[in-house]
Amino acid sequence: MSGESRTAQPVTRFAPSPTGRLHLGHALSAVRAHDLARAGGGRFLLRIEDIDGTRSRPEHVDAILRDLEWLGLEWDELSFQSERLDLYAAAQGRLADLLYPCFCTRAEIAASLSAPHGATPLYPGTCRHLSPATRAARMGEPHGWRLDMALAVERAGPLTWRDEYAGEVAADPLAQGDVILARKDAPSSYHLAVTVDDAAQGVTHVVRGADLFEATHVHRLLQALLGLKTPLYHHHPLIVGADGERLAKRHGAPALAVMREGGGDGRALADALRRNMLPAGFRLGEA
Ligand code: GLU
Image (cartoon, rainbow, N blue to C red):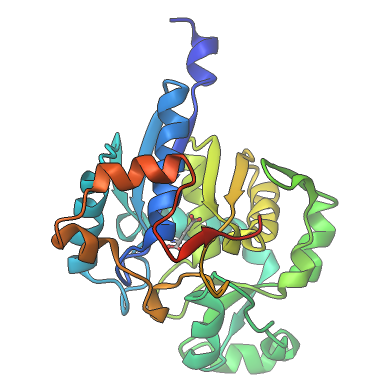
């Protein structure tokens, strides 16, 4: 096989956070990512996004592996973000002159970190305005690091990315505010780890739910600042309930583990998802 055709092979990933049980929406993402890789003779990676030490649980990791097996999906590589913290710290170091320490409360930081889904309140910039003397005096306190978004955008210039559903998208990271790039308790954040890993693992197509569309504005910016390649994006429509409400682990959506343990047929479910056929009471929302 020539080198050229090898590089054309797709690499996709399924990247769940082991902070809860997987639901139908995760199954859809996993099936689509898996099939895209297999159709092109490429590789499907499973990446456990466990940098949130306080919320990640080994029993959820276990259930994720079993859920995927139950769906009939085989992965080519399994990785854990908690084992890759050095990579994220190195990336953080390269962005140092665009970052400032943030001493704000854990609750505020949790809001911007652990909820990549949906609207997150924008950081008001409190710590951006601290004087150098105040900063120096407070460096002994627990702190995270935020990206000075205005500076970062100015440095990177105009950027776009290509989305299977939305087409060519102009990146608008300013609308995401000064995001956290390193947490108080880890040398990383969702945004930094996901961007670094997708590039380091050679991911060519990022398949994930439309709830992460907005996050891609930040990821595209980080790619530019760190000199990383930009993959293609497939932000697929979310599965919603009959009432149009989207599924979320925390809102009582049926867990794959419950279906699996109840004797459900995972391969049949995966095949139904391939045909966009959803169990009664569920449908695909808007893209
Ligand atoms: N770990 C994220 C989640 O479980 C998904 C990350 C991604 O696909 O970019 O919501």
